[in-house]
Every structure is written in structure tokens, then in C-alpha cells.
Length: 299
Length: 280
Image 1 (cartoon, rainbow over the protein chains, first blue to last red):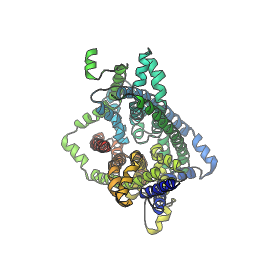
Image 2: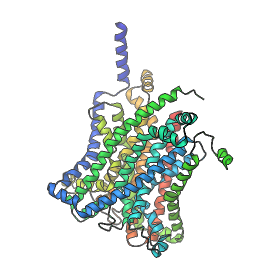
Image 3: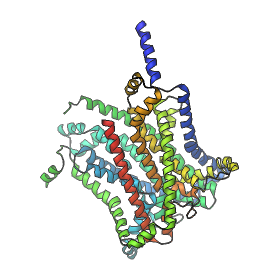
Image 4: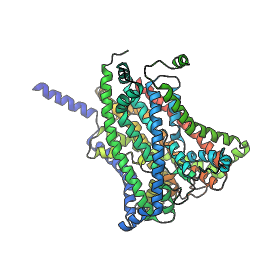
């Protein structure tokens, strides 16, 4: 009885020594919430309020306008090509980097991350300098009547470039943490390479893969700077949703611009919700992975 | 051939290294390395005086001052408030904490053009916030202040997300020891917690800064885009392209690429410093 009481007192002293007074705690929570309210909640709220400022009818007109529909379609096409390609690359790159040991691994990982450190405008420009009329292949493409810049292929290429690292950078640390024991066991038991990948690796990485794909897709659908440089802004032909929003906004069709923007804001909210769910699953899976690692004899 | 491969990398029973590595290098080269190299080669066709004149013209210099200045201030704001947000999310329990945690990533998920028009609408003179500050003669939209606010938005998640895991790994025993050795809470914070968090805060700051320097979509709407006053460097590249001045655009792009790669190197060094300190 006395021991219990002493323990409780000791614990409360330890707690008090390693946390802040109540007024500081609530003060900090207040500062953090106010900061996020101003910088995150306010912009999100204004998108929906401004989208509905002229009523539901205008809202519906703006998003069912043929130009808006063409922009939505092009956005889906660009993301529909870029995301699967970068997904396959992400799986291949993380298989090579996480499951094998070779010199230059760090350099390769840094090179994969490179597109993240390039300004979106420059990302678009590099494709203009290659495929544009003034670029390396410009004259040849012009002679053969192939259009890449100011056309859909340029938009797809720019989208692939800016979303290049997403899947790989999610999968590499996850696969490194999971190690190679399970695959080795499967191979020892007589499974083939593809079989091992499909039945052992893929189930292990599926949540991480989904996580990378979600982020990749959000950026692919929302990319503005890079696509803006290569698009040429031809209405109904080479305008993606973000570019369509820009044109509407600059022509003072504010309600219409925000109506289309609200669709992308909804996509962002869905992305965040999925991301939170998947993050939780990845954490669980990693905890499971660690459990088997602990039982491994240390070498 | 096979023997050579085995000598190059450590032996493994797992198959598929050649295929995965080959595809990785091919795709990386086609999408990233060759286009980037092409840009540098294109810049090499410019003469040095032309190149130098473009990247040091008065208009370009004004755009660097604005871009780097606003990015630095924005990254600083994010460094301070990001640390507070990360601290509150890891250490304190309050209702709605998980929702707040998820919302921190909104600037990553929200397309930059959407953020741009939303921020402009809030901070323009007749907007929700712009209206409040106008009587005091403060203008936010179409000034460097507006640009800085947009960059704070865009860089917000970086510091939070780099500090959070380090803070989670910080063992309470260390703080208990500090307290039992007679340190008060402020001393513990200053002498024990801050040195542990410093590399991650600096990494977050650098990531936020690097992102802000290249940012375009969220800034151009709120910037006003007046030459010499509120014109950021990425916009200057676009303006040169629209005037068919490809040489000028290339020169500025190469200057920005060199800065970006320098930042990337610096961030890698910071992270290396952080993990080394973390281990020791």
C-alpha cells in the first residue's frame, strides 16, 4: 500500500520534471492550431466558399463546360500514363536498391530524387530544349511532323518527370526495413523468381506501394509549373485542370475557376484521407516485419 | 560476365538484379539524366559573356533577391512554427490531434495553382484577411509579403515531417536523467532536446527553402509580377520563353539548376550529420 503510494508520487514527480506547466502546454497547442488554421484551413475553406459564391447552378455549369471537361480528360490521361510508368520504375528501382548490395547505391538514390530538387518551371523547360523547335530534336521532329511540345506528349513527359521519385522513395526504405529473409525462404522452398515476387514481396509492400501511388497521382493531377511551360495553353486541346483554372481566374471568372479548383481540392482531401489510412497500415506492417527480424540470429 | 557481376556486388540468392537494375538505369537516363544533360549542353552553346550578362542583368538580380529573400524568411517561419507544431503533435494529447496531423500534409496534396488562387483571394484588399489589415495600410497580396506567405504555405510540412520522427524517437529517460541531475525544464529543453533536434530542424529548413526557391504555381497569382519588384526567377524564365529568348531562359535555368544541386548536396550533408549524431 505504502509502496504503491510512493510509486505514484515518484511517477508524478518524474512526469512533472519531463513535461511543461499546463499554461505552456495549452499556449503551444494554441499557437500550433492558430498557425495551421491560418495557413491550411483558411485556404481550403476559401476554395469551397468561392466556388459556391454564385450558387449551385453556376458551379455545375463551370464544371460541365466542354472546355472544363476536356481539361479534366487530359488531366486523367496524363496521370493515367505517368503514374503506372513511375510505379513500375519504383518497384524495379527499390528491388535493385533495397534487396542487393552494390557500390554507388547512395549516388543512385540521390539521382532518383533529383527531379524533386528541380524547379517545376525548369522541369518543363528541359523538355522544350530537347523537343521544342529550338531544341536538340526540334528540326527533325518538325520535318517528320511530330509534335511533342505544345501537345499532349510533352505534357505527359513533364508529368512523368516531376512525379518520377514518388513511388521509389516510399518503397526503398520500406523494402530495406523488411530485409530479404522472406524471399530467401521462398526461394529455398523452391519458388521461382516471379512467384516469390508476386506471393511474398508484393503482399509485403502493397501498402507502401499504394502510398507512393496516391502521392504520385496527387502531384500528377495537380502539376502546374512544368506543364504550363510545355502546354502552349490551347483550349480544349492542351489545357489540364490547373491550366484551365489559371485561364478562368485571369479572365476574372473567379467562381468558375474556384469550381474547377474545388474538384482538385476534393482530390487533395481524398489523398490525405487515404494517406492517413495507408500510413497506419504501413506502420502496422513494419511492426510485423520487425517482429520477425528480432527472431533472426544476429550475425 | 556473370563472374564480373558477382565481383561488383555482394552475392545474393535473390534473382532479378540485372533486370531491375538495367530497367532502373535505362528509365532514369531517359527521363532524368539525358534531358538534364541536354540542358547543360544547350547552355554550353552560349558564349560566356552572353551567359554572364543574362544571369547578372539588373532584372535577374532583382528576381534573385526577391526569390531567395522571401524563401529564406518563409523557411525561417516554417522552422519556428514547424518545430512548435511537431512538438505539440508528438508530446501533447488534445482532441482532434489525428485530424490536425493529417492536415499538415495539405500543402503537399493541394495543387499549387489552387493554393495560389485561394491565397490571393484571402489576402487581396477585399479578401477575408486583406480586408482586416487594409485599414492599417498593410498590403499583402501583390507585395513581397504575399509571396512570403505563399512560400510559408508551400514549405509548411517539411519541418514538421522531418522533426516529428526524431522527436518520437527521443527517449523520455534522457529527459528524466537531466531532471534528476537538477536541470529545470528550460535547461533540459535547451541543453538536451534542442541539440538532438537541431539537425532535423535545419534539414527541414533547407528542404523548405529549396522548395520555395523553385516554386511557381502558388506564387504567381499572389505576386503581382511587376518587373524589378515582385517578379520571381521562375517567372522570369517563363517570360523569356514567351519572348522566344531561348538562350536567356536556358541561362537562367542553368543558374537555378546549379543552385538546386548545391542545395541538394547541402541537404544530404545535413542528413548525414543528423544520422551520425543520432547513432552516436
